[in-house]
Image: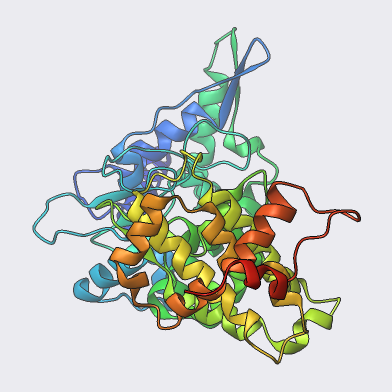
Amino acid sequence: MIKRILFFLAVLLLNNFHSQNTAVNPDISFLSVLKSQLAAGVSGEKSETDYPTYNFALKDLQATESVIAKELDDNGYKKPSAEEFITKINMIFKRVIDPKSESKYLHINFEDKCSKDLKLYKNSNSIDVNPYSTYIFKNGSFISDLYSIPEIMDYTKNPELFQFEKDAENNNHAVEVKIYYWKDFTDLKEIRERNIKTILARNLYLFNDNKACYKWLTLNDSYFMEALVKTFGYTQDMDLLKWVIERTKFDKKDPSDYGNLFWVKQCDETVKIHANTFKILQEIYTPDITNDMSNENRFLLDYIKGYIEYFADFNNKETGVSKEDKVKILANIVYFAEQYKYDKRFVSGYGDNSKMMGRLRFFLDQEEVDILQKNNYFNLPKFKEWWDNADYDEYFVEECEYNSTCGPDNRPMNITEWRKQHPKK
């Protein structure tokens, strides 16, 4: 009789656990997914090489939905309306959610942002062949990476499940593959807490405008936060944009990264220039900055110069944009930088040395110059005036920087001498 009562209580406990954690789709058995993951373990090793012990399927993503939804609800997440969520997802990730579609999840691939394929990739801190990914849960109106259930829920609170994992280990007689089980993962509690915190912070920041979570994310989730700007072109949050700009330097080893601050190629093949970037740059590059040795922003024009030289190089085949878009991007960046040549508030000579417009004149071929003129200099108010004024700068850049003919015994003509030979038309 006692055994029957104990058996009844065990079944009741499991049923209660199941009812609290079953995913939104009633066809998904939460417990069966969890048990499959527990039996497979965290990872495997075969001949001292990592060996996969579990293949993720859609049911694994579905099984996490109720766990995540409960954590969000318990921590004050205000679920946006379907319309609000659709608008925000499009604004941030440039993905369109079709309300009529029966699909419940969308995959955001950080290496192929235009891909609409639903593939299941787990993120890892180690080097991985899979692209970084996160997922849109349409019914729950939230986003989350793909997790194993033990990574976001403490299954050990249920003694039946804890015993199930032990039994799975005892019954495993595989010789070639060594399986590492979740129960032996010493950092699992800390990792679980970190995963939950990340899920909460991302959703509270993106969909509830929680500034405290924004601060935590910039300190603890920098890759994701930078990708919002650099990969997806989300520049509406001026605080985030400023944070990304100030931590991004021009690097010759990865020159295109700096360009991600200024423009993005969208999935419809059009190019969008980030107007807000120029607003932030104008804000942080102030007259007092060039003498402030502690302020890294003083190198801003140097970074821009480096990017212009990379992107304007007519031999560069890596831009992935049309010539017209290339000229438009360069025109906007150079136009911003050239203003400092005419701003008397700045240290005399610094702007002259950068010679941004002269540099552009040197790099553009005739076809690109024709594009510039045909498009009325992209309606940038003082562009033509500054372009015409930069003819001497073009000569100086060519002679002294690219032909390397300038030196102690071969000084370039000053502008007065040069202008006598090249009078303005």
